[in-house]
Amino acid sequence: MLVLMCSNATEQDIERVANLLESKGFRPLVSHGEARTVVHAIGIVEIDQRDLELLPGVDEVVKLTTNYKLAARASQGVDTVIEVNGVKFGGKYTGLIAGPCTIESYDQVDKTAQELKDSNVKIIRGGAFKPRTSPYAFQGLGEEGLKIIRSVADNHGMAVASEIMEVSQLEMFEKYVDILQIGARNMQNFNLLREVGRAHKPVILKRGLSSTYEEWLMSAEYIMAGGNNQVILCERGIRTFEKFTRNTLDLTAIPVIKKLSHLPIIVDPSHATGLRDKVEPMSRAAVAAGCDGLIIEVHYDPDSAICDGAQSLYPLQYQELYKQIKQIAPIIGKEIL
Ligand code: PEP
Ligand code: MN
Image 1: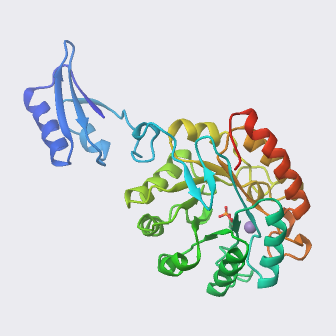
Image 2: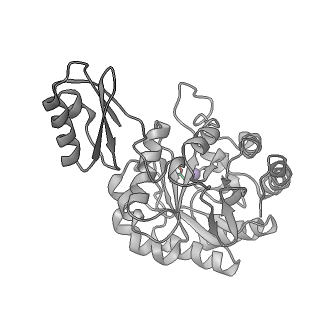
Image 3: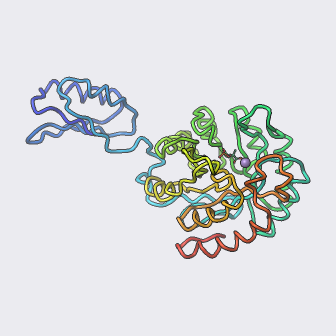
């Protein structure tokens, strides 16, 4: 951050600025130019810019760096690559996660897993605690659901990704789950972000329904500030004026996030589109745009699904899609293991 002083600022004014910066934890560096004096604020601290702007002799405060430091591309030279059960997300790798929206029964998860295994799926998704818009809709099987998906995954040599909704659930999730998912509706649940920041498991951080890239990266920063660097960002569609699709998939997020951050970014075309026949083309597009992974809803029998059947692929559709994206990825220098 730079504090540009007015040309008639006094030594006292400059000293006041330097003192305030120092008291907030910055290292102030004063440079006297020909036209005016500039005070450089060096350090990773949060300050309300207005506190400086209000001081006498201050002309303008210019923010040079982003608010997110650990998540910023500038903070490390190489892409973060996150590996779970032999699947890699980030760098030159595109990782895949598939499974039902919600865990309904042992039989349902098992049948789905068996189908997915044929398509080389090594990480299965499935919600046990569901953030439903209506309090009357199925809320998930809770811990029983986590036990089911863990047991099925173990039988098939798979890892598990599931959504955590509350701070108090972390201990339970650490027992059953390999990847913690923070849903779109909880992207700014700062207490939850802090809590998973203390966990030793990768976190999928979904983009909030109306969140900007900066807000999303600030949420990632919350997790990283707690010591957990294994954050996978997930673009899952944002809310726009368009009602035809469930959300609007913002594929521009891929190149933008890649420029701003070293963290992997995956795409959820299921919640982004809400329509099965739109999931395949948008998956292909996301891989072509360089995403670091996909998380896709697949159900062994979508027509009988309790939740999100209309956007869940049939296993055969997933199999076909897998073959296609395996071919697309190498064109842009990516690899699906
Ligand atoms: C989900 O993945 O099950 C889910 C609820 O997604 P989102 O948080 O993106 O709506
Ligand atoms: Mn769903």
